[in-house]
View 1 (cartoon, rainbow, N blue to C red):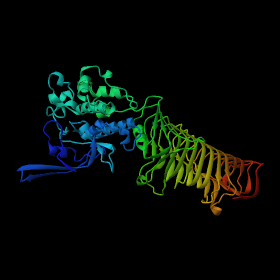
View 2 (view 1 turned 90 degrees about the horizontal axis):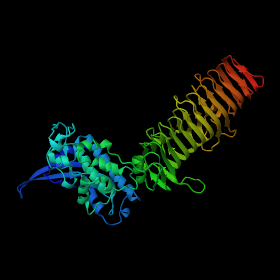
View 3 (view 1 turned 90 degrees about the vertical axis):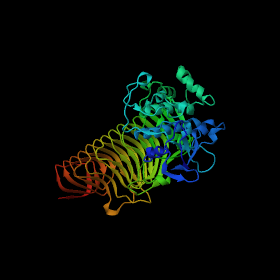
View 4 (view 1 turned 120 degrees about the vertical axis):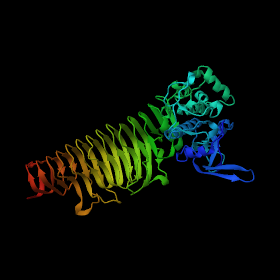
Length: 575
């Protein structure tokens, strides 16, 4: 698209429009590609052409559209959520522009564009801020204070050209020639008011009333945005000293505490995750939601719809074109809950492929979650988090990586993965119970200390040959109770090991288990009521066997080890 843009009141500077933003790259800014000037012999004038991104209709067209807008918005079924995403896109675009020290100076609905739709007459996001003909770089500008209302002694006010921008949206201080980024915030506040509250055809009259009367009576509450009224009031204060200071202060907050927001599309879900308040429940109706997604707000519940048998009807999936890059869903907040959700991505052996569900830190609750595909299914970090009724299948490398402290995992099913559950080396005091491992090469890898592992079963699967049930090279002070390896399990020949304790392991108690063969090294381990099935090989020192049985007991350079009389082995070998 070629244009010599600049529709604001006042002289347009096309060269500045290009140079001010030619290095700005953001999804919410119109991209300018090339600037050209040439002499036109027929008119005897210099002609200017700016090649820019081809966009769709302006926000003004959307606001003036009297038709049913809900039928013309792409990716949304809820018009109010669509409005929220328009506002959020403007915030992100203006934050980026101000971070580049560029002042727009003509922000209004006519300079906000929708993405050009692929086909049909639709309003498609993301929105894009354009028309930079009146923009100004603030680097190196001189601060100048003027007497009277224009002098607020603000170090962020600059000596700039007077009366720039469209009058209706122009901040009062612009008429004095001393202003800064807060002038854009004023214009954005008025634009927000238009977006979230239909002001046509009395827009100018309403803008005037906003300056002359108590604005709290003019601005209506929004069904989704809970802070809309105070936000617009704080953005449109006539005195810059009373106005929000920077775009980092401009934040839309969706929902109200203890409220529920119903979401039906991927775009609506993305919008709510970016703007929701604390203590809100996001209810996902049955369907498929395309990620990736990020939740960074604390105390949020995300709940999916289920059928009468509590089967999950919500699928969160990664689009094929993004499979090799990011995590599908990342939770980076405390005290959040995820319930009744299925997460899916393609099975991949690429190391760069992210997690299916990633919880690097924080405290959270997972309940009735199904995970499939990817390189690693679940990264379960943080402190004092709980995961109940979790099913993980078809991961190329590891089903669950446990990190953090004091985690609890109950009722876990892992199928067809290379490694079932792995504790990292810094994890402490994990409680893992009621686990079924089917078709895994390595069942549980135990690192860290102070864990309780109970009721774990390693079962047969025709597609996989198991190499090891459970091992720990350096685990310490752990309890392993009722670990069972099914007799029909397909094993990796004579190399299969049920339990392997490394030389740096210390003080692990194994009880009520049928999990051989076992190789025991390290210091201070205790086996109580354990059927080692084939053989038990012991090295290290200070171990104790009580009521254990098996075919062969082997000891190699084993010191201070006690074998109680109630143990029963068919054959013993001592070296």
